[in-house]
Image 1 (tube, rainbow, N blue to C red):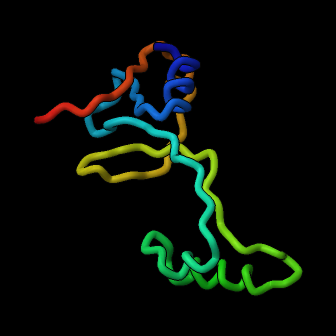
Image 2 (cartoon, one colour; image 1 turned 120 degrees about the vertical axis):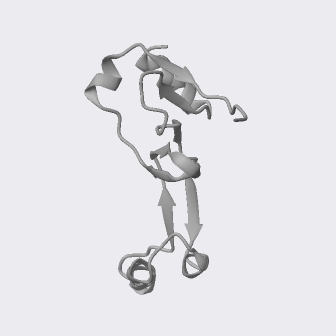
Length: 107
């Protein structure tokens, strides 16, 4: 499939990959947008204490009027052992017509 079709598949919740990527690049997915209320942020294990402190100060700033954090428009790469990292397509990826939808296959 081409890049446009791959983006459509991501929008539909699929995992995609370029079939010429090394096997360590399992696939890419689009993170589901999420809004995290201020009360939940201190309990998040995916944020450093410094980042939680930063957000807490923004929540307490009455001029800012912020009471949540939100995740939007993020792509993530599934790597070995289900590790997840941020991801951006390269120009070569965008111009290729070599994408496929990833389905789990038992080893």
